[in-house]
Image (cartoon, rainbow, N blue to C red; front, side, top):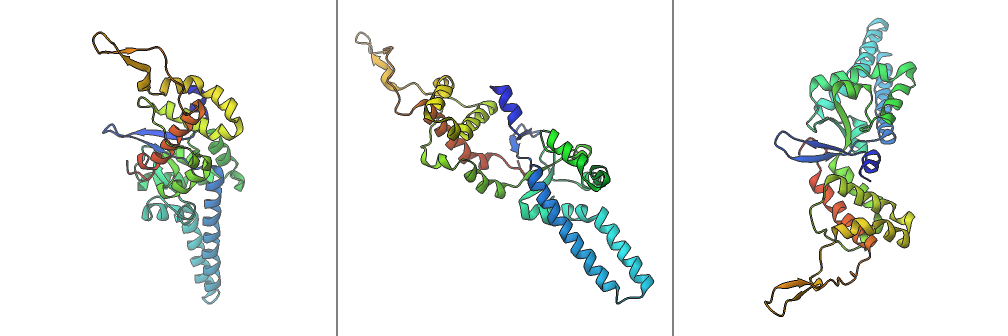
Length: 272
């Protein structure tokens, strides 16, 4: 199960030098394409505005000014935005994503310039095929520029909160349950994966799948023990009563707790 969870999960676990672990949530192709489209429209508006303004200038000076603006738009538009707006261009800000280093720290000038310098390689023949293949094939949804600069595009904390509520709205009617021990990162992802798939499974199939895992996480009920009449010490009676919650409901309760705490424990803005 752990191997399956690691393949299906797109989050990136990062550990700081101080030993603090947090999670980055990489942005996929669709939302990055929307952000890029917004930036492209904004660039086109700037160039069109400058082109109209240059019509009022001398032909030679207006031509050179327009070429200068096009050069700045092609090579420095994203760099200037990312360095002045905490890793966000206009499109990224609207879509709720930002660029950070792979360790979660803010993007620096060298990394920003390198990742944007390689846009010409990602946009081979102006089709962006290389970028699409690289993003789709990599776990952190990175294009070539991200690999070279060691950066990743992630969701911001403010954008993740409403998204989490939309992903599993059925958890709102489930009570919060607590496991008998602290869960590892892989176990948390397994519980959340089960919760996402639960509506497709149904109660009977869900209980069947959850039975083994839930049994390991359930706390021992106090009714399972009785007092020894000789010395008053607790003795296992061997009869553990059936819990009020089914196995699937118990895991859904844990998932409800995890989904509520996730936004507190994971900072994707370079602030672990």
